[in-house]
Length: 620
Image 1: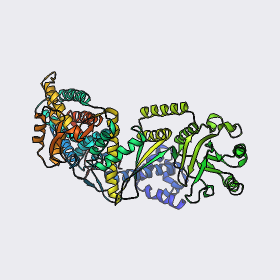
Image 2 (image 1 turned 30 degrees about the vertical axis):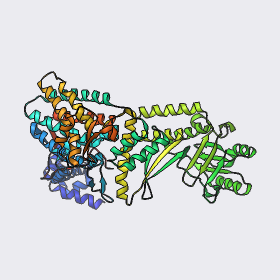
Image 3 (image 1 turned 135 degrees about the horizontal axis):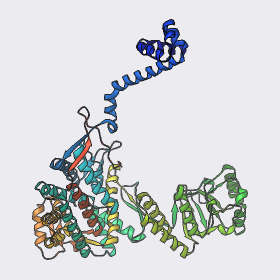
């Protein structure tokens, strides 16, 4: 280490000799400097050593920084790159180009005769889908200005999907139509802020008209029709959703899962089921089905780990005295305690089983509380100051039957009080309304369905993984559309509800000419969905829209599947009011703001290469 140390000092001594002489003179070491050999001076004087080290560090840092400044700039654009700015019509045109390309890709999926889109994926096989938001999420442009336009329209589809679960294609098409007409108007010299006020005025009027036309949904047939239309005319999916809603109720919990057969299946789980099976296969009471089946059992619920049987001895004795089976729901059972339980079961004939607590974290505590309320028991947890030593047999719950497999546990006909169960249902319903997280809402809805005593599962079948994925997207859309229809009612489908709503805008007056143009933009834009559906089916959209507007009966529309004009309600071509409303409001909100854009700022290109901008939306 010393050899390297002095070598470095000697090396920089010759570069810094003048500096050392001045340094010595300033410190009163002039005589020493003249008298001693340079090397000896360095060895003996610590001040000069410190000075040289400082000189070394400064010199090296300066050289490295100068040499690597260019590469540092290239690889750290967030800190070193400049910004590129575009103004006026130029920036709006660039955004419009990206918006147009994204909307063209999404628009091909619209209507019963819309086409599929194939999407390359970073892993696995390509995805084939007709879901508008899935197509939009996978579009990214290298040109930053185009990409900004695409990302803004993508946000419309995402927002509509979050609120209504369907109508993303309609929202994208409407956003493009409004923004395109808005760009033309601003280029002609109109005030973009007044245009936006006119657009908002028109949207409010159209929403009022949609609510006035809306009809509440009743009966299995209407539910099946809504689901069929949302699933792009697939009657099998429509009937599937109508059947499952009939069994679990319109507000029941329905989940969609991958099936293992070629055909679709429905599974209704009655009672409360959670995804934890028995800890040991020795608890099995029915060797044929490999299940543990208990009649009129007691239920012990805790979030603690059972390390020895002494802690739960009183509960075991109580169950044996009453000649009743005992189910223990706990965090875990350690090997010694588990072996004793199994031995009692095998030799003594005592019916007992243990399963682990369902869920994780805070959700686990909530689910355990739900089980306690359903069975009429109490959770042994330190959160409420309850331990095995303090608890008595009154904390045990009970039910009519329990079925336990290696994967899940089903509790049927719990002994909980109806008032407490209803109170719990109301509490979870309020939490669902207050929650802003999609994940939390999903978990709360699952809990709600389990407490109510029924969860429906649609198992989507298909010949390949790609086919199952495509059908699953349509089933999810149809399910969301049906729930939206139950919530706010239905209007005629095929884009005709918006088409007829455009009539009310003819009499609407803005405060000035620019606002009036904004109203006309919306009037033209809301005719586009109907025209696009007709065009995708091989018909002239303008001719179809013109003929519909000429009719006096506002229930008449165009059946794109069969190419004829029919009564849309009688034919079952209907849309949820909420889906149409949310699509229009979200599209107008974003598109009108895009119209007011006067400047765009992006990172500048480095060495002819554009630094990629990360998407604000995660890939799924």
